[in-house]
Length: 541
Image 1 (cartoon, rainbow, N blue to C red):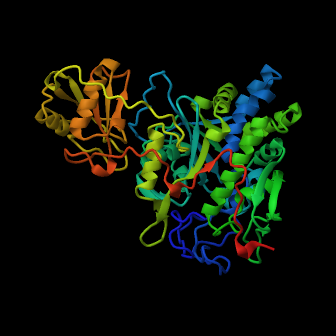
Image 2 (tube, helix red, strand yellow):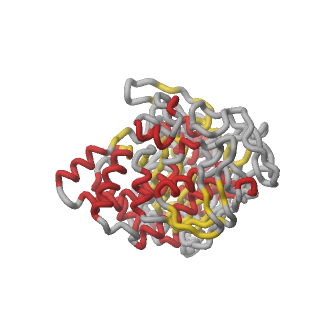
């Protein structure tokens, strides 16, 4: 079990849960099953609902869909249009973020960030059948599965970061495009962001939390997930002991497996993906690890083309999946999904890494929150397009000399503290401009346009200015990693980010060149075929 993510073995987690997240779990504030073993959560713990039974598979299935749909659609133009009409489309971002898209690298490539959302909506009879809780049919859905897929600019690796649905965050102000209702900024569990106007508010929340620009989202509900699981033809999973996720109080998914490796599909695959009672400490952390194992195994199966050669099965899958899928307008047709799938296929399985955002309990243990240091380190790696597997090729450590005296170097300084969560810090560009002048950069000048950026950077327009940019960074106490090439600037440009919101001394805590993924992220490599789930002793037979 992850020691650094679960604070204190056997301690309670008591996060208030919105009503109606599924049948079978204990109501908010009530105790779960008795637990006597170390490392298991007891009473009052926040639970991911049994209502998530179908949506748990979506994490990789939504991406696999991009590869599968066009295979089915190839039969004809009319069917292609029909599948396009199935797709539901909504706005990408409902917030007011000024966060910009990352600059292309030297080869003109940019990373790709896709937010996968699993909705617990019960807006159809099929969703009610799969998710239960008929009383929630009219409730606004929650985003109970959230996972950011980061594909590197050169498509050599992929990193997948999930976040516990109970994580307490600031949900920024969001405007519902249907009717114009404005939801004010609030502190709440991140899964409630979907209720503030739709998936675009979940995207806005992630952007503010991580400082990562998000290109697309894909959201799926319960419907069609079983068909998608069946189409793969079975996914190998492993348990270290016999497991039966069931007890007299109605807790559990019904999963029953003997010790060892089994190929699961259909209903049994859904049971695996929604099992909390039975894995590790009976919390969402164990469930997330089981989902990561399933996803990694499923990716390997898809790479081999397992059971995907039957055109009839592909057409059934395409029909069900597109009918259940909601995407942003930028992914609003099947061809775009197909192109996305081809992009993802380029990533080697062994360069795929899945992690859970490092988290900890709040001081009063009423909810969970990002783990200081470790969570930001994880997000920083993605912002800087650094692979979470630590296998990026080391860049040559070249430090070209400045090409002109510092008093002759034009430097533009811009305020990048336009955070929708913390609010902008007025005058930051002026403060750092004055500091540069004091340091001898007499041609430093402030750009008054306010933007949002997580990290402070020093950009340069061409190789000729690289030495000057490195010298500016050194003068300000910034690490070399802050210096970046940019085609959108004309002079050496300093953007003062949200990591430097006060003073003229760059915070030492941020001066890190560390490119390692924190151990608390509990990374799983996509090629790890020996991964096996630990079974909770209270749910074995």
